[in-house]
Length: 243
Image (cartoon, rainbow, N blue to C red; front, top):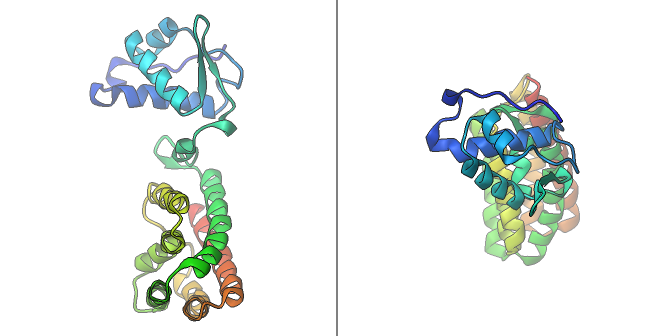
């Protein structure tokens, strides 16, 4: 059985008591301290090690069960589940460790974003109205403008998934896009390494080409320009994590 986390009464403050208890146990599951299939320590032991009462542990375990990180078995306690089968809600925990961004986790999230956006764009071109496509094209033209600040430019790139998903009229895609945007926003202000002006000049023609092809409902050109833009922006953000 792995050693439990130490805590003093002042480390767990009452207004955030339940969330903090959940976070401490969740992190032990995600970092492998509690392995899949392993039974968690008894409520009494968890309560003692975290210096909280057993009712707080009980509520925390219920939340962890909702996240599909543990399975509560009547009479035998809580058993750890494989985190790969957990709820999508734990993604924010995978990409942030103790308030600090986890570079590997953020890169994985960016890879998911790249894959999802490519398909989202194609569906948007099939379903969006002409007015919606023209609005999107105008947004891309504004993003391409060198008059925009670096922060505004990076924000425009990050919000592409929300813009595309809105045009699909697919509620699940919109929820996923908003979740991806929120998870990335939780990592703090976007940044990019090196000379961003030079990178913006490279991305500008891609943004312009994408805008023109979207306005014309040219799915083939939009797909090529979109995939190249996504590939470059993913690398841009991933490199920024390391700076």
